[in-house]
Amino acid sequence: MEGEEQPQEKPISIVDEARAIRDEIRAERERLEAANKEAKEIAANNLLSGGVGGHQKQEAPKEETPKEYATRVMRGDFNNNAEEE
Image (cartoon, rainbow, N blue to C red; front, side):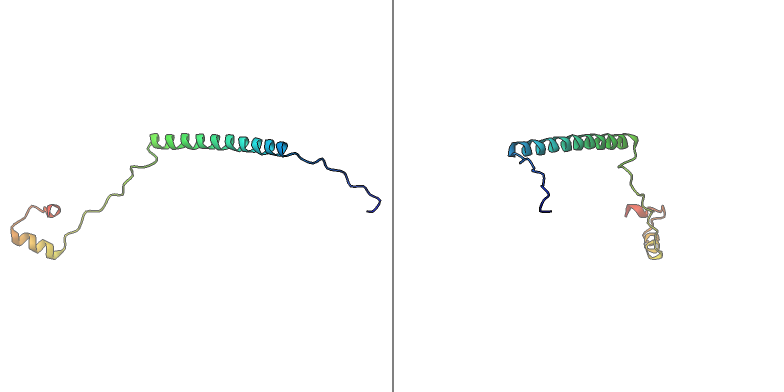
């Protein structure tokens, strides 16, 4: 402990540190661009294949209640045009 010498670390210059950070940022940017390109391709394929969007749930036709039926018949409307009301 007292007799052991600790290795002297070379001080890192600010310029070297900035270059290392710049290289990390460049590498991360390239990874993000590749992921973004892949996501765009997947979205385009889904859109063209019809797997996304445009799907609408169909509503069941409204059932006529007995009161609505009586009102319609009393008016003389026998053609079952309840949807037009």
